[in-house]
Image 1 (cartoon, each protein chain N blue to C red):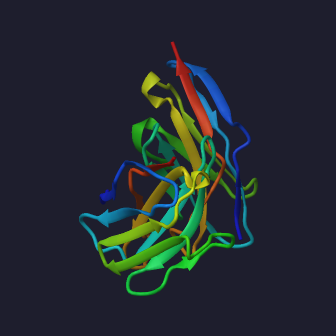
Image 2: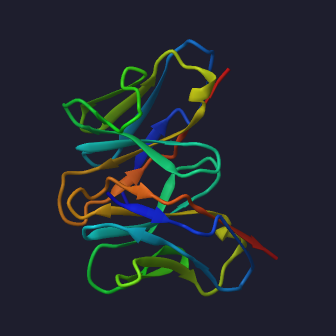
Length: 114
Length: 117
């Protein structure tokens, strides 16, 4: 079984500032890692995913994440945020044998202000 | 990416009635669909996994007789909340995936807000 920890429930940040949303996972097997964004009353949109290969993954909307196996982390970053990035962000993990059965973290609310 | 359509987006029903939520894959064959429930300001909890043509596999603690899941075709899965009660009010989200393979991704519907009054 896997678990995902998102330590920050809320992250306030000013527009054009950089941001990092933290995600740590626990698993006894190899994993795939994902970041999703959810806008109010909507489903989830995939930002990026790590399946294998380069540990630095680039996604949509200028986001990127780095897989760190030794620290079991997959932190999400953006060098300059916009008001429109205000949303809920979920980190998720699946094992490589049953890809797509996802275990989600509790989410981080990114609040971007002027 | 592929499109998954979930309907209705919002539904209000009376306590004791049943409500059906549909999840359709519009441009791919969804061999597997997942149903999640999300409480306010909380994460998504997997309720069940359904494979086309077979019975759904429910997660521990989910009442299969209350949350009926049907995945009769490769493009449609339905979740029926039977004899709904106010505590069933929640945001329900489906996701769909194609045949198993490398890099197989699950695509999410837009969710259904169920309110039981």
